Length: 300
Image (cartoon, rainbow, N blue to C red):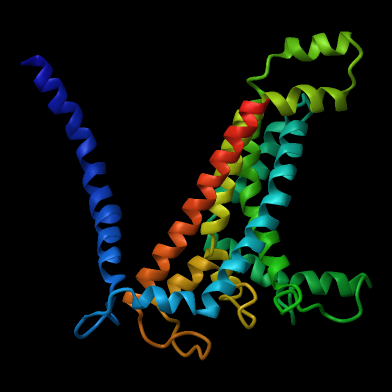
């Protein structure tokens, strides 16, 4: 009887989370999967069309351009943020003055709202009266304002913003991994004549392996799913240069009013199909990463 009461008491605490997961997670997923096979604009009648939405997605050049943009965006973010976060973690793991303050400063962007962060950076990178252009022209680094949100630099700009927002989180995870490495290992290697670089190469990197695998996995998923800062800064422009997968899906469900480049009506049916294809792409990349990291661990 006591066991039953304890179990009921425990499950009562889990029930709110379970209900929210069903209502906000599982039900919308089932709802979207149902409409993948329908022509439904969000109003009026729904018409069953089978696999027509998937056939349309295969011919949708804008969608596949968004997929290519997503890989460019994710690749740039990963190649910059992870090495930089590791270097910062190593430096801030040393016994230097003010390291706790520096840790807090670098971690601060992680807790700032993405929308607020994007608005601030839009002000900085604005082509006409942006803070960055004013600074560069004032000190004669450039003569004319650079169009940071134009065709040539928009992708680089949104990658820089993404790196700034993500680096603190990865740095914190690397710090946790570094603090779990026994100091005896470094002391023994120093007695054997190993310098700082050799310790980093042959001790730090290998012993951070499990943590690094987790960080890379999180970074891949977050980079492939990211679109909020891009939506605020460029809305996928100019001419689709920064349009990524999840932003494209978002616009199918919630088309921006008055935008000639976007679909002017809600595409619930087609949007559900594209969202499913997008989820499959992210899932396949995650599986490939798991498989590749597992093989590398076995070879080591």
